[in-house]
Amino acid sequence: MKKNTKDTIVIGFALFSMFFGAGNLIFPAFLGNKVGSQFLAAIIGFIITGVGLPFLAITACSMGDGTFDSISNKIGKNFSIILTILLFIAIGPMLAIPRTAATSFELAIHPFFPNIPSLIVMTIYFLINIFFVFQKSSIIDTLGKYLTPVLIILLSLIIIKGLIMPIDEVINTNAVNVFSSSLLEGYQTMDAIAALLFAGIITKSLKSKGYRNKEMSSMLFKSSAVAGIGLAFVYGGLTYIGAQTVNLTSESLGKTEILILISKSILGNLGPILIGTAMGLACLTTSIGLLSSGAEFFEKISKGKLNYKLNVIIISIVSLVIATLGVDKIIVLSVPILNVLYPVAITLIVTSFLNNLINNINAIRLGTYTSLIFGILSIIPGINLTFIPLAKLGFPWVLPTVIAIVIGCMLFPNTYKKFSEV
Image 1: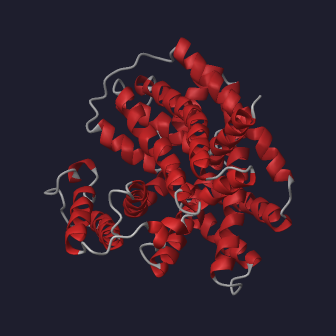
Image 2 (image 1 turned 120 degrees about the horizontal axis):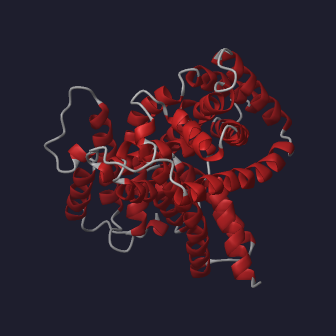
């Protein structure tokens, strides 16, 4: 096997593992259940923001020095630091880590031991997290290497059997704005945010293998294609099978319960046990990685004033409190947060790709701050932005951001610079 081909596969699988968060799997099945026969539009929308956007984020970072700083510093150093802190809080104690704990409880524990209080289970969950993070043991990394393939095999069995032998007929649910709502549902994976923060890992790996410039871009594209195909298969397959469950569920059924229903319908009584155990352990490995990286980040950003172990404990306690809300309430909590962070992230990513067309730093800054302002306005109760095109679809920030960039280019015609010069 040629070196390029081998590296493409290795990096592709690394990218796949990075974004294959067990907690993400509850979203496509739930989405399919809500849209029914319109599942194709839902799959396309979800894949655009849940798969495509994260890989665009990595590619955008690679156009600089491979890190998020290279595309956020152009807005301002303080802006970059504050935004990075907010992104780490989002994928750490505020949303992602609590969601892994809640998902583990609802999939792996509650269906089989319904009388055990969630607080007890999640306290044990975070004590296990703390133990492994303090020890910095390689055991959990080894476990993760085996868990991902096991989970992929289980999901492949479910998807393939669901395609060949549908659970039930796919019916029309009369869902509206399916495509736009699916784009917003893709936000919930939080993979675009994770991609911005961890892009350096992938570019560093490629550099260590000797790739530079155009060759690196080519490798990133090919590797992203490998990972993207895998993720699209999983997300698309689960969305379609979720669409088969419309007649089998009620409005009150939660996201994790739909996944349990699917596993039981396709794999029998053993299904919930297998999928619950595999996903519970996979969530554990994910949360340990997020907890460790978050603790290291806050130690670094505070220049050692916030001790690593203290950070681990604080993040764990905050995550525990939020995790007790349950998956569905955490998702409700995440919607306004992601509706503020994603417009900024998308603006930074897109303008990085359009560097040759829009290389006016001040215009980019004006557009980025506009996306932030309208993201904040969109979540404030009482403020009605529906007069703005695309606002009714959940994207009130898009047109104002584009207008702001155009105005910025007109107002600052003599300030053009390449980002690399900033």
